[in-house]
Image 1 (cartoon, rainbow, N blue to C red):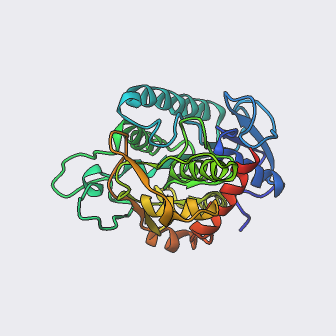
Image 2: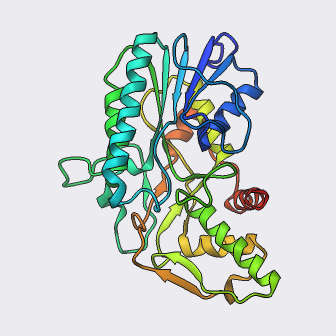
Length: 325
């Protein structure tokens, strides 16, 4: 049986292909000579550099929808909730409408772990919370309650897309994808890049002989998260596209870590000793849910996929990239 992504695919459109995940997927598909790649993005250039082309979905066989207003907790918080919901919803509605009109055969949608029920992730026990695909509902809760309006829009768009029989559907729920090319200094960065930036800046101050202030952490550092390196995410996306699986599926790491432990890893990556660093806990900053981790039982069974990049290696590669920026 030929791959869904072999050269017979006439055209693959990547909406948001100049963004972090979209760019890495576009580069992989271009490198493997997988048909013709078309980028649709409001940004004029990719996050790392280079481009493929700029057009729309007409004539497309496959459309990959990564376009979104997103970021870390510096972006996804209450003050921005409704603006983000409105913008992301409009993007999805417009893309689905265009796909139907163009006769697209397959639509991939980049969803998020933020769709999972908030009540499952806010225990004060400090235990790891492993979220499987049916955890959009919580016991005793009559309706889903995702994390913020960002999560609600992602879940609503999942429901919307699954109403159509016009095209095949693939939906990935991403859990904290990070790596080279992602935001690291513009307010949209997620925890790995933010902590690496702070650690590298701290090392530069040490090297120059300047005084060093406390290492800033948002919250008390007890939040638990898992983080998936971009190369592993791309591999999961390719496997999902090649599969016959149409229901939402986790693409994430099942290894969780405390944020204060991640901060220590960032400092080690920058060749600093965490034990000698006093943390400045910012309890007035957005911190998100208490605990979130990806349950990968289903994705392992369906796609035979599992992450292969350790958090230590991923942080090292990301830190090296940030130093070149």
